[in-house]
Amino acid sequence: MKFNAFSFIGIFLVIFSFQVSSQTKAHPDLILINGKIWTGSDKSTFKEALAVSGNKIVQIGTSVAIEKLAGKDTNVIDLEGKLVTAGFNDAHIHFLSGSLGLSEVDLTGATTIEDMTSRIEEYARNNPEKKWITGRGWQYTQFPGGLPTKHSLDAVIRDRPIFIKAYDGHSAWVNSKALELANINRNTKFNGFGEIVHDSDGEPTGALKEGAQGLVGILVPPPTQAEKLDAIRMGMKLAASLGITSLQNASGSAEEFQLYEELLSKGELTVRASTAFSVGSHTTTTDIESFTKIKNRIGKSAMIRASAVKFMLDGVIESHTGAMLEPYSDVSENELLPKGELGLPLDRYQELVTTFDKLGFQIYTHAIGDLAVRESLNAYEVAQDVNRTTDRRHRIEHIEMISSADMPRFKKIGVLASMEPIHAEPGTTAVWASAVGENRLPNSFAWASLLKNNATLVYSSDWPACVSLNPIRGLHTAVTRRTTTGQPESGWVAEQKIKIEDALLAYTHLGAYSSFDENSKGRIAVGFLADIIVFSQDLFTIDPMKTHETQVVMTIFDGKIIYKQD
Image (tube, rainbow, N blue to C red; front, side, top):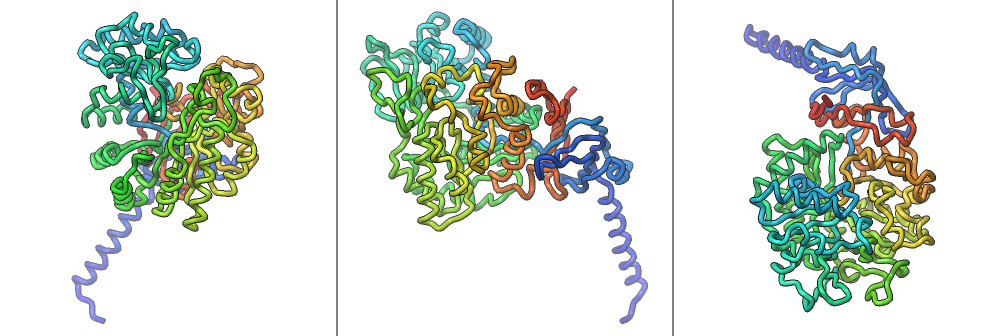
């Protein structure tokens, strides 16, 4: 073989280029040292330091060894002993709705009717251009009988319609003006899933349950595309401050999914977001084809995903719309549905579950009452047998009440228990507990029992249907079953509290597992995505009652610092 001068020059340039490239990649972009890094690979493995290049974790080890990797441009951060974990995964959220709510009336934390109406009145005064007053956040426990009435709203605003959803989104509170615009009166009937609540004289009270909310909600002017995008931007900033780096939307449409695609295309997306398309009796063959095309087009993207669907099989305990095996304990004599009701016919639900399972979709089913939980498990089991499918990781959402007989079925069928610890925060459960009754309380939000039955537990917020988006509030409830002020002293259904490591797994590694990402995120491991959070306190060693005081001091997403506490 003959070489000329140009050949030698070419070889030299290739070698030189390789050396420069190697040197460029040899030094990490970011190094964290002197920390207590919980890897999440098991419940008790901790390291001191880690290194990040690009958007991946490239080394884990001792501070001495990792710091030696630094180059002149490496950002080296001394953690001074602080706890580090993988980023939080909120496995059940309604992010667009919650983000839009950031510019609406917020009744979260209001403890009296006077406090709520005062906030509403102030919001109306500060936003005179808004034709509708909308918002969210009221709790059932704040009203006599568990539901609000139009009279307290009419006392502060009569000329503009008011439409405010409960914290869980399953009931709405409206004033007389809103009822008037919707043509709701004593003669109005609603035959769908839900109810127009009437008083003893037959007049609508101003409380609307489940689907009946739509009679008024459809009149509220929808936000524009630009307003939705701005809302999500605001929501992402809040999520970053709370250490949330991944989320699974538990409702959505093709139009909503496009918002995340647009933000991704602009380089603005700072959460890994998946969308579960809302489906039910109304779902058509055309809808199914549309969802399937989107799922197949997106595939297994690291940033956005659209491979799940979401059913609503029942309502909620507080308004007696959750489907129960036995009647509610505080049911009235004239109540038409003493056990609640299923949100769609079981034959239609089974048909759709089997169809989506065959098409490769992951299925979420909202099931709060023990009957709804059982029927969800039944449907998944039938679909699995008919389609001969495995590892679909179908999920049941909420599971606030469950029969002991159904707990082992989660492991047997391979169904994930997707739950929100903050929904069990004492102080918000009085109406719930009255409806369930003392005999059924031991199986309330039964996290410990499900873990004992080897179920895969996945945690989330259900924001905005909650008292806080903050996962740390969820951790506090999970490990204490007490309020932030320590009530009740023995814990509410204390036998169901769990250990901090189990709660953190449910918010990180198992959250990644729930979206089929357990080999790329949810743990601190070499080759994994650099989604990382730093805490102000060591959650493993502090008094559990101080869990709620913990703050996120730094959030790293895709290898970049997106939040740092002042």
